[in-house]
Length: 563
Image 1 (tube, rainbow, N blue to C red):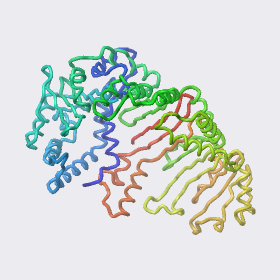
Image 2 (image 1 turned 135 degrees about the vertical axis):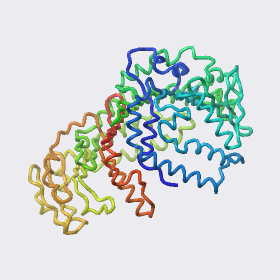
Image 3 (image 1 turned 180 degrees about the horizontal axis):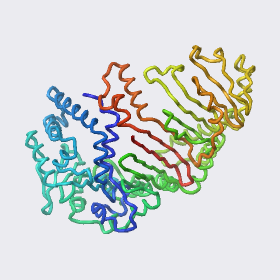
């Protein structure tokens, strides 16, 4: 079967991604009625307040039409392969079921085809927890069409799961012999719902799962998602959180939904939980209480996502102090790729050492964490060793790749610049002069013009390869390849305001695809026609990622633009 093309995951993920609105209306159920089913105290949720706009869906379907065509070819090959294979689960052959499922999608990998099966590309959805057991609700375009699709799969495969009924509502239950867990699914009026839960607790969760009962307090009416979106600046297409304190409560409180259900399955004994584990879990969630994520932008030509590990103000302030003043990766589209790291090595060592010493002074008492005490002490002993002055002075690095031949990435086929950022670059030059014969003759001084590096000082020795070095007050820069030394001084003198960004990377997606294609060719594999070099400009744009310590924790911003 063909390898799924690079853009396929991106396309599918985006088309399935659904949204969260910045509306001031606290009644989130108006935009997404599925949130009426979500308990307000759920430990985790990812949901939308608005569906994807039709013009955005159509634009993405049009852009990645060739990818869907290639996926159709992969589907054909998979069906062909099923004729000579067997898929068994618990001794039952499910090959015909898989073929029947694939047959439903044959020729329907487009808007009209998917909608004919009952799906909607502009639906609302929600995934959340009943305790820590996940529940997924996905809006349907046509519930009866979707039910007819399931019926055809059963008829064409010759296998079926009998429908059960609870208070007049039909549902399916699938489980192995003597298995305490079961999969549950139901097609309701406007959506499909799925969950995995212990069958012994059916009478507890079926009323809520099937929409016969709603929680007393829900995310549909408390406005929590709207508040999150306003606080974090999320745009209308996907947001949620994992509340780690509630996760800890579900695991360590003996009367929680998770603990009692797991006890029923025989995998868990709440009474055996050591009190020290509860105490230390709550201590940890005091430092890192929540994980959040959301879509900041999603339109026809771009998308931007944000992930955040929230911390308390004490830890957040300590992390923010680690960031140096190295400029983030360049946003110049002329570069195939650029990257930057901006961390004060000395401060990082100090932070890790202080943290390790604090943990060593108050070791974990939870039996399951005893091994960590040994590792913490080893880390403290390692960090207590003297650090070479060179390492302590480091602040990071930067790199810009102007061009490269992915099929032959030899040094003389590379054009770019890089810098080593530090408090005292003269120290590095002095060390190199003592260690590398002939280096002392180079006149690399702060503010001087770039100096050509003799080939006898380098591992690469070809007539086409050239390299220059230059020094500023806090960095050493090197250019690689013809014409790259002209802008080397300006490269080093760029504004050093990192604004909390400690790692960033910006790259042309076509470069990644070219590299993949070259790697496949080297292994004798065929490249994906849907993302062949002639289609790069039409399909792929640029990706940027930034990791930031901003006083509130770790924030990760990822953006993608398209031609």
